[in-house]
Amino acid sequence: MTFRASVLTLYPDMFPGPLGHSMAGRALEEGKWALDVTNIRDFATDKHKTVDDTPAGGGAGMVLRCDVVASALDAVSYGTRPVLAMTPRGKPLTQARVRELAAGPGAVILCGRFEGFDERLFEARNIEEVSIGDYILSGGEMAALVLLDACIRLQDGVMGAASSGEEESFEEGLLEYPHYTRPVEWEGRTIPEVLRSGDHAKIAEWRKSRAIDDTRARRPDLWEAHGEHPDQSPSAAR
Ligand code: SAM
Image: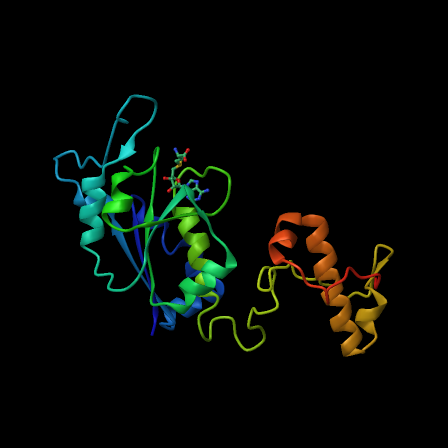
C-alpha cells in the first residue's frame, strides 16, 4: 500500500517543495509515496474566483468559505484516508499520531490561509484539526509539509537500512540521547569516554540514562507523561 498525500491549498506550487529533495524526493520519484495537489481556487464559482469572505460578527481578516473548500474536498477520491486540516486550534501533532498516520493509506490535508476555515466545514466533513505547535504560521502549507515529512520518512525503504527511527526522540516518550562524532577532541571538548570504550552494554546504559536525565531537565511535560518507571532512575554516568 503506497502512502498517498492529497493536499488542498491556494498555493499548489508550494508542493512538493522541500519534499521533492533528499530522502523524500527520491522516495517520491521511486513511488514509495504519492502526492496530488488541488488548487482550492479552482472550485470558486464566481467570475472573480473568490474563496473567502469577511468574518461573521465582524473583525479583521477573511475566512475561507466552507462551500468552496467542501467542493474542492469532495472532488478528491479519498477512500479511507483521514481528512486533516492544519489549524493552530487543532490537536498538537505527536510522534504517536505520526506513526498511526504513516502506517495508514495516507492523508488528505487542507491548508488554511487568512483567518482560517469556516468552522462548519470540520463537522460537516468529519475533519481532524491538527496543529504543529503553539505559534502562528501565515498558512497551512508549511504545517502540511512538516506533517508529511514526518510520515514519509517512516515509509518502508525511505530511511534506508541504517535507521529504523525507533531510537529517536519521542519514540519511547523520551528525548533521544546526545550524539558525537570525530574529531575526538574539538576546541578542548572531548567525546564522553564511555562512547569510546567499545563496551556496548555500558554505552546502552549511558544513552538510556542521558535520555532520561535530559528529558527530565528539558521537557518535564514529556517526563510527566512518560509515567512511573521504577527501573529508570536518573543516572550518575557521565
Ligand atoms: N486566525 C487563526 C488563529 O488565530 O488560530 C490563525 C490563522 S493562520 C494566520 C492561517 C493558516 O495557517 C491557518 O488556517 C492554518 O492552516 C495555518 N496555521 C498557522 N499556524 C498553524 C499551526 N501552528 N499549526 C497548523 N497550522 C497552522
